[in-house]
Length: 210
Image (tube, rainbow, N blue to C red; front, side, top):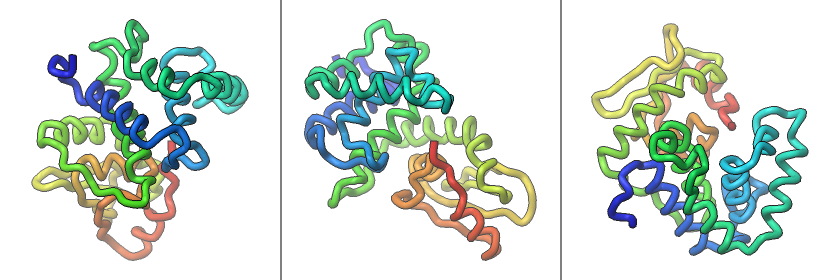
């Protein structure tokens, strides 16, 4: 089956599930205070229940919390395998999954990996880094609004202004690391920031968490 898996989103789904089973339900994640089972419950609920509206609409937060609590009562391996095989769930459809889940799956996979005491960055294929760059370009402008300063990203020969203005904070790193930074994982993202000291300080104080 894995031989037919082509999209980064689907491959990260499978790898995330493998990592979850390897770490176990009680392992830490970067989504503190969630442990691995809670993170898997979040992912399952997001795809399969209208209660997921509570993740993005605060007045409905209790709906999401209740849905996650019910999922956490289920067997861990069963829960992981439910996420692994989305079937006809809209977010799991081949034409939909890459658009909605590429960064979701990559970032949450790293949430598990990089919360462990001994971790190291993965060397992703160039094609995967290119895919992530396209999503950083697409979504990064929205995320960079939270920086409150001009922001430019650079990766090798590629560069893009995410928030216009001069002078700007210039953030350099692989696309995968830039994606982690812009999704609120700056403390583990391997990036370099240059620019006027006051702007860089403001940038580092920005809350990119989602």
